[in-house]
Amino acid sequence: MALDVGPPHYHSRMAAAAPVEATFFGTSSLHVSDGISGILIDGFFSRPSLLRVALGRVAPDRGRITSALSRAGVTRLDALFVAHSHYDHAMDAPEVVKHLGGRLFGSESTLNVGRGSGLAEQAMTRIADGDAHTVGAFTVRPLGGVHSPGNRFPGVIEEPFVPPARASSYRDGGCFSFLVTHPSGAMLIHPSANVVPNQFDGIDVDVLYLGVGALGAQSHRFQDDYWRHVVEATRPRIVVPIHWDNFFVALDRTLRPLPALLDKFATTTEFLRRKSAESGIPVRFQDAFEVIRPFVR
Image 1 (cartoon, helix red, strand yellow):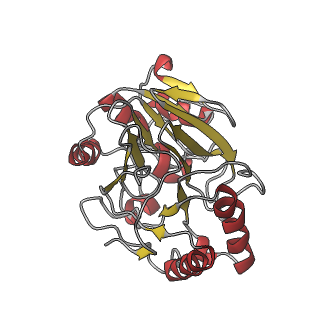
Image 2 (cartoon, helix red, strand yellow):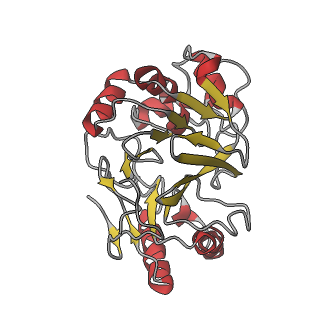
């Protein structure tokens, strides 16, 4: 069930030249298309159970991957950008590229995940902070950052990585946010609930996809600083929280928050309600497979 904080209305600083659409798949997985070019962020569809993650080995589930993409009507891809190389971001990415085509963009650790899955070098591009990558009418700029507090699996993946493997073997390899611009508007996808101070100063966007995983477990000062350096800095028309859902549950079930033992979701939603009221910036949760047109007034 979608949870709304403020009215779910979308505005744009520019009239949309094409109806850019954004489809959410839980965690920080997002498909953005203008009907000509398609970009996927992360693309995590397998969502193995908590028991398997804790006690076993994980690997891409091709059935779940193809089922989710088919349900969303995604039949081809131009680019897949991975925020960092933890399993809930990078594990499925090579299989998605093999299934849909396109190019895998990520850190050297992410490229090693691709190599271990059999992707050719010419199908992958290493990204760095501030690079500009043109995908049709879109421009995607990776912006280097830091993982949310409590990073359990830091480090890098130094050689081709072949699943199945322990979830702990998927080291983060460096974290990125993505500034996606199009003639009809701009959005920032910020998957990890942490920030480098002043990193986004001078960047204005229409829509901010804001990572809130574990945000409720942080101090009030951390939460306020996070809002100030990400939301107030980018001045979005609307905030869409991401990486809040229980990613141990398959996508054929309704999105739900992580259990209270793993995250303080009620604290997060109360914080978002308060900040939305103070700032006048609407906050809206997007359902899995829900399609929005973020730049259409």
